[in-house]
Length: 256
Image (cartoon, rainbow, N blue to C red; front, top):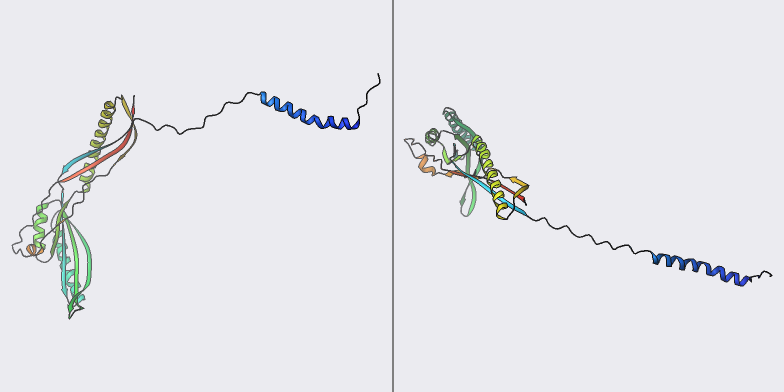
């Protein structure tokens, strides 16, 4: 047989159809592949359960161990320089007397010179000067400090008296109350776990507070009554009682 020749036009049509044939086969092969499973969208983790927030507070009644008194040397007049000299002299004498009393700690405060004014015919005008110097006394001997105040009140004003807790006593109370508060916190955590039907607990976080209850203000005194005591009657200083506290706060994870 004679070979059959393909015309040029037919050859072009066949070549043009080849890419479409391969594309169709590729699409059929791709459609026959298994479809990958759909991945689930990630979700937020569930909040942990069995977490309890607790607080325990330990308290103690403590008598302050130090008496505190605040005095002032005050003078008024037209000559500021002379007033400064007079107030300095009064303050030096008071400091010397305080140093002579056993167990008394002495601290000087501010020394101020300020103008004094009066009103004349509706107008304010300067009428001299006021000089004031402060003296702070502290002692563990309440009676001795009371006697010293009666002596100094003849020349100085007693602005106020009060009490405070020394640093050593604060440290001891802080240690003791912290132990008590931690023990209370642990006992409460264990009891809470049992009440909710859990076997035990694990500590998540905890904070221990500082010693509270240390800041009562000194009591003001009537200067006229104190300074008008010629017999130098001892000034009474009553210690009273302070309520000190330490708190422990935190959270625990209850465990089955």
